[in-house]
Image (tube, rainbow, N blue to C red; front, side):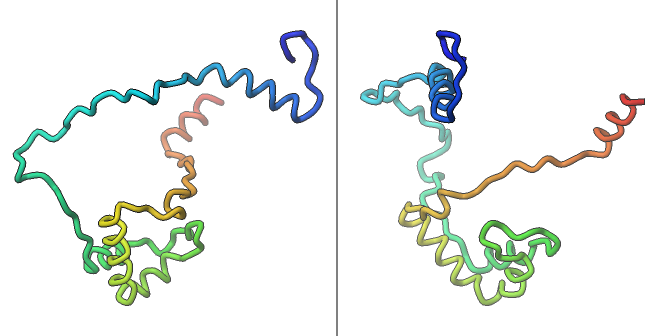
Length: 134
């Protein structure tokens, strides 16, 4: 229902009403002046981490710890295949990660990752719900 009291009947009208309602919660920030960044590191200058390398042994170790009973991701690559190919692909994957870290560029595929929250039930919570219904 809009300000005049009439009901929205089309998808566009409903979308416009929702947009008008929710646009009020967003603030416009001054992009001409950014606040100064506070230094977070508290140690000595020679203790800073300036570089990080990922070795094929690190990748192989992580791949071999994958659980076989997990569903594949959006790329449809199963953990079983990654585990079986860990010896052969660890060098290439390590090189890919290292080049990404060195260049500072992240591929569009990585930026558009599909992250979904999954509700996991805990036995105690299920029991509490059952106890309340009794």
